[in-house]
Image (cartoon, rainbow, N blue to C red; front, top):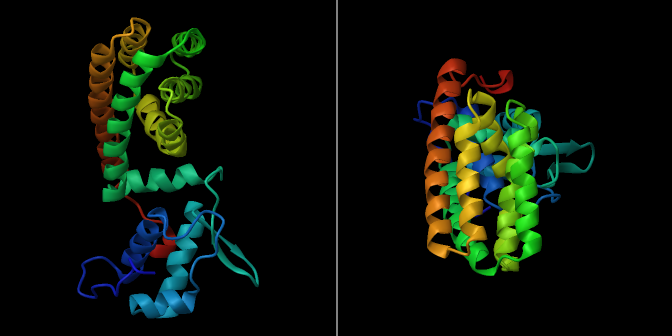
Length: 250
């Protein structure tokens, strides 16, 4: 538990809220692998310098968020990455404005730009056909957020696959949940899907042309707009909800 340190008791946040934040960051940082048991309440309390009851309340909140699951008589486990509840954890992180989410956004931008350039250089007809299919699906899904989001995510993952770099494709696949939550938040708040669709048209056209520079530039523009829309919708949601905390950690 190298990254967990005793909390600052002078913090303006309630102790239970700060503990929940600390544990959220600790677990999402990869110190515990999905499916593994997390440290016991006693260990966490000793490391953080607080009572077990406070840790217990924080773990209840993380259970509500879908990050961990309690197995009676066996301990508390970090949910696997394919858990259907995991998007709620990232959604919560977006509302809190956690730096770790900012890091993920930055990482996604750099990855997307890199794979777009490689895809333009290495794409084959199969990749182009799949990308056209995903783009057509996005066009047909105008106004249907869930359907549009699914096609949008598939498009980006196919660009990564078309890069011909298995490692980069694996990394992009690994942040699929982030993509899903990010794009879903933006599209559910959007009144017009055309700007996002047009961004993808420009990316595909550049990849089809085999123009590496244009592909990267098109992805840069898309990422800039996507990040701006995400931050706008996140700010609006946070203001509207006043970042209401679950009852267990109020």
